[in-house]
Image (cartoon, rainbow, N blue to C red; front, side):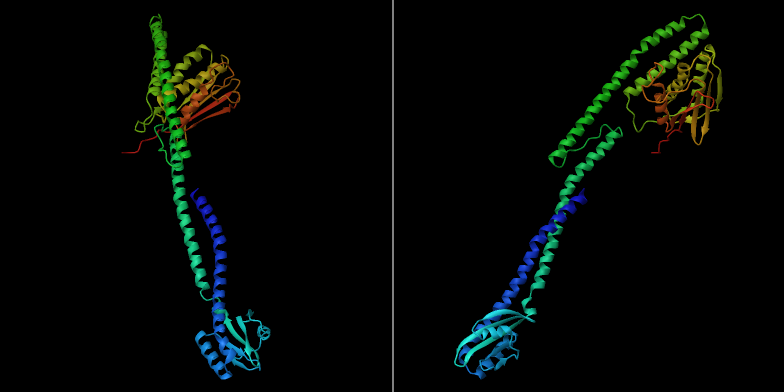
Length: 429
């Protein structure tokens, strides 16, 4: 923007100076020519009394003296054809002056001033003074150089002023851009200092107001999520009491463990809602091997009840990945839960966990009807569910620097690949 403003000011300045200096330069040349012509005319006028009354010898002496003083060729044409002074041929201007008309005309070497002198007994005499070209243009080149230098100085001053003005405009805009990027990177405490023209100050105030409003809305959202999560503790407590009253110890232990896992997830939601992420916090890390093995063991009980064959191919751990343990647990539960929710009873499925080029890849494949297009979109579901399962898995993969891939299985059905990157280590202080 600064370059464009400078270019605009330079173009306007140059056009203005051209429109002003070109006529002025022409005027300077005209004034110089007129000044030289006036001096030559005055010299010629000084010879009129001598030519009109004196003899030829006196006229010759006076002409030679004037030519020496002025440095210009001076000629006097007497009526009898005698030429005194500079021996020059008769020009048309001289012939016209011999008839009694004084004039100034152009010649091959510059200008000539001819004056008719009447009153002599033998006729009309003519005085001719030649003005050379260098005298007509004396001082013009220097004046033009001064004007050109003045034009360059004015253009430079205009560029300097334009740069200062552009800086006062560009700096607030750059600050607005920087604060906008910081807000986009979740630095909600970023604020811009209003500066510049009133319009930019108004925009800065609006951006600060927007950032404050976003902070307020996020705080309200966190509080609502935290309150909702906290309200789940009451039914969890009731569920744990019901589990303790079961007669079968295995069933009671299994339900109690599920209630404990759900309570940990709720606690994680409360912590995540109330605590903001800090750059000084420890990076998220989880053992994918341990979590996948634990969740497969949990879902295997339901698979046995519904007649589903489970094929496992789990790499031995530990397999650290860059995502929080509760997030990875929710993602694995979402993928395994989708198998039970979207395939009929008796449909076999397979779970695999392996390393692949620095990533940990979790594969969940089934032999069901497959997944519809757009299944990974948040809230999209063709089976009456919430449609959040695959989105939870996708966000867990992105948090670990990976991705979620959906594809058709070799023998039909669906195949989901959850790629997880390694943990991010903090730099040493």
